[in-house]
Length: 408
Length: 224
Image (cartoon, rainbow over all chains, first blue to last red):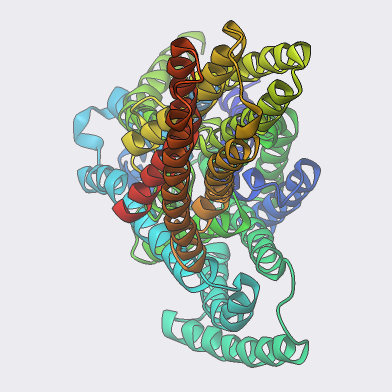
């Protein structure tokens, strides 16, 4: 058994463990408003998450992926030492996974992307020193700490404010909802299509531009607008509970979409480094971009789903009984606000975290008087987790690197 | 996930309504106490007083639970200080009813039968003021859900104004009642006089505290 083969085996195991942690922690985070509202039952939430995440991961997830997320370290500097590169990526997977696991236990809302970036920083430092790091990327991550919650907050606030003034605080909520439903559906469809093609399937590299997709979204949106307007008006008044039913529908749709997009994008955090290790094993050279074998995506998808099924559901189950404060309306404002923020920011190339965006969106909805009580002490944990993620993921990787190195 | 879910704190509005429901159970008994007195049924009076004391204790427990659940780090759609002052005024209502029960049972006070109709009318006016305030408090949770604005808020504000008017009516009835008492002051023992004036004031306080409670709600609505 060669050293390289041992490393590939280890990398597979660690990638699975990393994906397991993503499933246990991150998936539930990105679906929190939907699940907390009780609109989706625990069982259904897990089914939606499992199917959508797996589909997202395997179908469109990173068929071509960058071996090092966000280019924090330039792979070219390892060209002369492929074995060290394999070792480093293997260590980074375990280091990031250990940090994620610890964060889950301490219930800190951490970003998986930032964890793997932190882990690669740790490897870069131990292997090549501080000169190996791309400080521009590091800066944009620090920026994202501010941008993701603030942008999520602004959108969450705006969406809930609209819903409150135009629908909730009216004489007949259901009638008002029936009137505005086609407009909301229009915006929803435009954002959904835009987001689905660019965020969900960006790895397929479809030959389309932002504007053509926007046009496509607008055309489909207008069709939906006209159709829904006709449908709602032909059926008379909104009727009892129409507003709740309408927002529940939107919430479930957003929830499934978020899980799909999450699977498509964040599986790369686990399979990217694994693909890098396999690439070196097969070709003997270090590459920046790597065609991922299909079975690697399955490892990632299976890891996410098993993490969700074994550990994630416990977390989801505890909230079902705790939350009574999330309504279909404020849940939608938070979830849709966050999903839209993720879309806009990734369009702009900012490495933002879904988890941080959701936190911002929930607080934004609270500021618009959409939530009966917010516990602001949690914000302390959130800020703490921003500052801890990179040093701790880097530190864990450093240790793992030294340990594996000593045994080989 | 847990971290994000922890963002959602336990909201105090449902418990505030529960507290008012306990107050309602207390206020419900006030008329029965005076009726028992008019019937000369001391056993029944004592039983009601005991029941009231139990409900008042339960209301206190709810009040403490609400206060414990509102550290400064909780962000509410209303001002936290306003909410606590609503609770404090509201909590005076079961206290007042307990005081009335105490005054009626601790001493065997003579109740002239000629007072029957005006006395019950006075009690009813105070109870009605409370009932309207109870309606205001019952709609609070729904009002928070729609963001404390819009037509529902206007309805509540109209009801708050109505409570003020009812309280004014209760004050007038109290004036009449005291007048009636002093008209026959030569026929009553001085201690009876003293004790009845205390009782009338306490009965009036049911209306007073009801008004103060909803006035704080009005403050809460206008501050946002």
